[in-house]
Length: 222
Length: 158
Image (tube, chains in turn green, purple):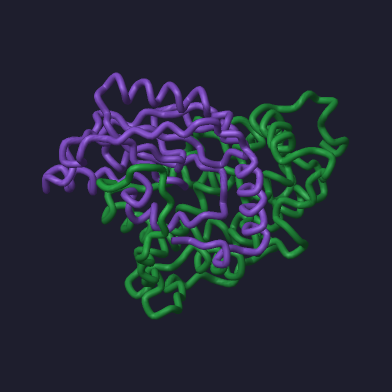
């Protein structure tokens, strides 16, 4: 900065340290095999087992990143109810009644994305507190969540329900819930309409996702 | 530094497309101002990590505004409503300094490397396919910085 005399792009020569330490991360919290016949109960079991470690992380770091949906960490049960309901049969246009309590910060359906992120952050903060768990990368976290937890099953089930609705803006939101590489049937964003630019698609999705669309815009199944 | 080859192919292609589009944007002139030496400069942080205080209005999807973050903010009071799921949050969860280096800036001031840190820092939502939508916010942020005696802005892109 001291020597720059014009706009300059320079590659920073140092790499971030490998977050994995020895290169292999394994979650040290033993969670039971997810029971997909009762997803909500399976989610609650996982959250109960992770809670002491989440609290430990929060105490040690002096902060938590949970809370963007409007739910406080103490309202994690409502977050679980919300995710479970949306994985089962709840509408994507109204916050599930079973998840009453929190003052939600966002309208549906984009609220679902933020609720999911709060639950994912809860899991991530919990497992990074356990002794011996090292410092997993984001890919480690996603791999663990999507292959070993009820949360991953719930998110894939939400993704499947979104696919059944088939709305392009909802598919775009699926891309905000399921990272690329973890949706088996192609891009997590789905196939977006080719008759619009990325900006136009984003504009449509924006108006659709941050406010309930007019009733005649809703898919028939809703 | 994250590189395209480290990303999932879908995400890497998305980034390439964004790069191609941005490369076609007409930027006009590129103002360049040589700031005072760092040891005499006041620095403000500008992040696109969509950070905000818990009681502040969250970033909405497509938000074109910005949020103010006071320099004395407790990191526990900061949350992030960035919509993308494809970037690594684990380091931000461990230490907010990776996206908003408040502590590092204070240390640089104490070491005499930097003159002062701005009373206010600024945050926008980086997940935006058309950066020109942030033009008004950028102008307003720049004006506020100028009015408050800021010499340099340090950008932390997320």
